[in-house]
Length: 313
Ligand SMILES: [Zn+2]
Ligand SMILES: [Zn+2]
Ligand SMILES: [Zn+2]
Image (cartoon, rainbow, N blue to C red; front, side, top):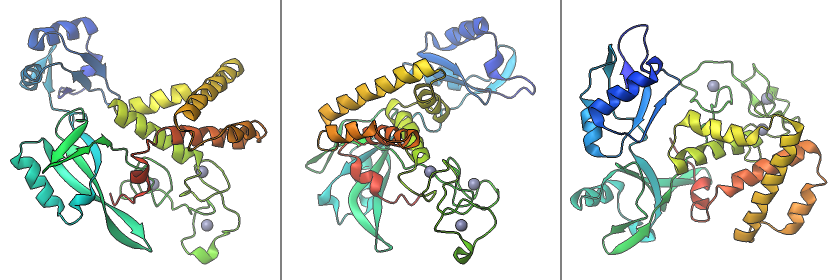
C-alpha cells in the first residue's frame, strides 16, 4: 500500500488506525510491515482479503494505491531434466499453460564453456505463487523443484554489489587493482591485486571474496525465507556483525557449532582437518573462511550446479 497524498506516507499512519482500518477491509491479516520507501507491506491469508485490499483507494484520511507486490507473490525454482534437452523453453511453457500448472516463465540456464554459451538441461521456472511446489510433473516425468538463488549482481563499472552498471554512473574502478581511472589493461598494476569490496588480494570478480559470499548469503536468505532484500540484508548483518568482544566470542562459537553440524550433513565437502587449520590462520583469513563456510552452507547439493552457471541476466 502506498500513499498518493503528498507529504504523507502509509507507514507513518498510527498503528491503532492501521489495525482498525485493515481489519475493517480485510479482517485479520498475517502481517503488516512498514517499508523503507514509506509503503506498507501487507501479507494476507486468503485471496479474498487481497481482492478487498486491492480495491482500496483511501485509507486513514490519505489517498492510497494498493498493488500486488512485484516479487513476493511469485517464486523461482530450478529443475534439472535431461529429457528436455531438445525442447524449446516456449514449448515447455506452453505445456505448463495447457496443464494449468501456474508457471509464468521458463528459462533454460546457459553455461559458459570456452567463451561460448552452451545450453544445459537445467531450467529456472517462475511460479505465479508465493511458495514453490516440491515437484512438477512434465509429461510422464516428475522433477523435483529446488529454490532458485541467483548470483549476486556486481556492477561491471564500479565493481560494487547490488546494482547494474546501467543504473548508476560512478567512476570506473578496475576489477583487478581496485584503482580508478584506467580502462586499458596495460595500465593496470595487475600483479598487485586489490579487491575494492573487501581490500583482499584478489580481483573484484573473485569467488573467494568475502563480500561476494556475503551477498550470496543475503540472496539465499531472501529466496529461501521469501523476504524482501533489505530484510534479508538485516537478518544476515544481525547474525554477522557482533557488537562486543564478548558476543564475538559467542558468535564464533555459534558459527563453529553450525559448522560442526555441517560436517555432520555434508562431510563429503569438509573434514575435521580443515576445521582445525582454521584456528591457526591470521584473523583476516579466518573471517574469509567463515564467510566461505557461510557461503558454502547455502549450497544445497542439488543447487550447486546452478551457482556455477552464467546467469545472462
Ligand atoms: Zn556501479
Ligand atoms: Zn587495474
Ligand atoms: Zn574481495
